Image (cartoon, rainbow, N blue to C red; front, side, top):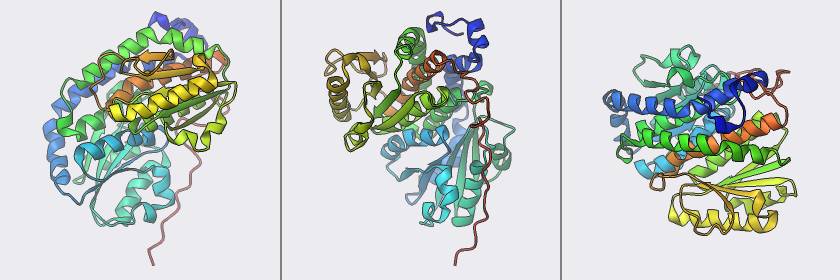
Length: 390
C-alpha cells in the first residue's frame, strides 16, 4: 500500500519506527471511500435525528475536540456556517472544560459535535457533561474512531445522541492523528452539509489523495533534507484551520525538532511574520474561492521575495496564475469543491512532509516521545467539579 515513490521501503520504515504512521497515511483513500459509502447507507437514520434540529433557527452548533480533533472543527465551521446559514462555532474541549460558563453563556438549544479519536481523553467526556450541566437543552453528535472508548459507550443508544463510528482502520495506532482526523472530518461534512454534498465526493477526494501519495513523497523528502529549522503554514478560512493542523503534525512528528507556526494569510503580517529567518520553509494553502485566493497569492508572493523562491511552496487545486515561478503542489480535479473538503487531500501533503522531516531528523514517528513526555492519549488532566452557579 505504501507507494515506492515515498523513498523508504516497508522494512526500512519498520526499522526506523515509522511503519504505523506511514501505513495510516497511505490507507486514507481506502478509508475515505468507506466513509462515503457509510454516509449514504446511514443517511435516513442520520437525517431522522438531525433534520428536526437543523430546522430550528435558534439552534447553535458547537464543534469540539482537543488538539487535532479541535482543528477538524476549525476547518468545518466556516463552511458549515455558510452552507447551513446558521451559527456554527469551533470551541476546543480544552476551552469548554476550563471555562464552561463562558463557552455556554447563552442558554440556547445546542448541538454539540464531539470529535475524538479514542474518546478516552479526560476533556472529551467532561465537555459533554459540562454542556449538560450548563445548558437546558443539548443534543450530541459524537464522531469517534473507538467503539471501546468512554465517549462512544456513554452516547450510543441514548435519545439525544447520534454516534458516527469511523471504519476500523481509522483508529490510528501511531502517535499522530492522520487517518482518524481525515475520516472524522469527512464523515461530519457528509452528514451535516446536506445538499452541498454529492454522493461521489468521497471518491473524488480519495482519487486526489492517491495522486498526492503517488507524486509528492519525493518532493517532501527533498524538503526534509534541506535542514530547515522553522516552518510556517498559512491559509484562509477553512484552510487556516488546516494550517494549524499541518503545523502541529510537523511539530509532533519531529518531536519539536522543527519549530512550526501557523496563521491566516492576512494575519501573518501583523507581527507573526517576525518568525521568518534564513532557515524557514513557508507553505501556503490556496483557497478555491476566487476572492479569498487573491490574498493567499499575495502572501505567497511576498514570502517568495523575502525567503527566496525555493523556500516557498504553494499547495492547492487551481492553476498557476499569479504564482510566478513558485513551487506549486497542484491537486487535480478539485477546483470546484469547498475548502473544507479540499483540506483533506491537502493535509495528506502536510502528513508526508511531517513524516519525512521526522525521519530526516532521526526521530521515531510512531512514537516521537519514547520518554513519555507527550502521550498519544493525554494524561495527567484533573477534571474539577463545576460548582453551582450563584
